[in-house]
Amino acid sequence: MSCLTQVIVMQHPSEVSQSKNTVHLLSLVLPAMRRYVGESSADFEELRQGLDLQHCYLVYPSDKSQSAEQISIALANANDDAASSKCVRGSPANSAPRTAPQTQTKISIILLDGTWRKAYRMLQLNPWLLELPSLHLNFEGQSQYRIRKSSRTDSLSTLEAAAYTIQALEPNVDIEPILKLFDAMVQARLDAMPTQVRARYHDDK
Image 1 (spheres, rainbow, N blue to C red):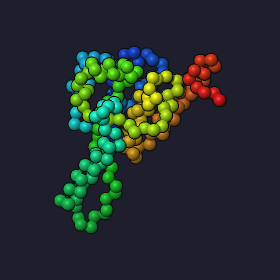
Image 2: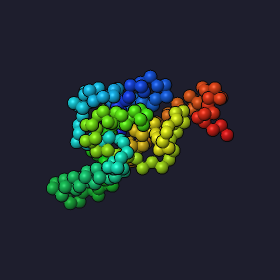
Image 3: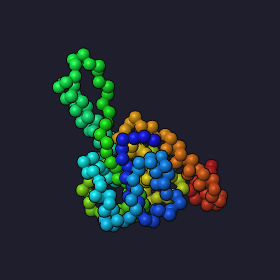
Image 4: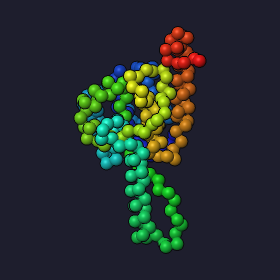
């Protein structure tokens, strides 16, 4: 899958060996994805040193976070204004009409990979993350991550969060292939479970 958005994953160490984790699958679909494993600020020093803060967002819901859709519109409008400025300065008067504005600015998104409790702890141990603008998803669907339980009804797997954020920021990007691959992985794991175990995660009716 090709997209402008740079996906960065800060992965809690306990997720590395978690068989149900989705980051490895995400890396297969997005080879340019960057993953850093750790918990404390010192663990992510390499990430901090190479991070372009100009257009970097933390994917984490909060009172101050903006929706990914809002950010996409703002970036598209900024690019459209820049294109209009260039047209006024140097484009011929009879140039072809411009198409609808598209987000051209390459941005980075940071996702915290871990349970909600561990992700919150990572956030507290890395106060530099709080200096970044944060975004959230206006997602009204339901996670297909049926093989892993969560204490929150609005939880998404890291793969789903990345895919839906990319879709919100870049509406022209088709995320269906990555979601189909994810669904296939989930179903394969469900099929491999004993019936009694599968019943805990899946409604067979």
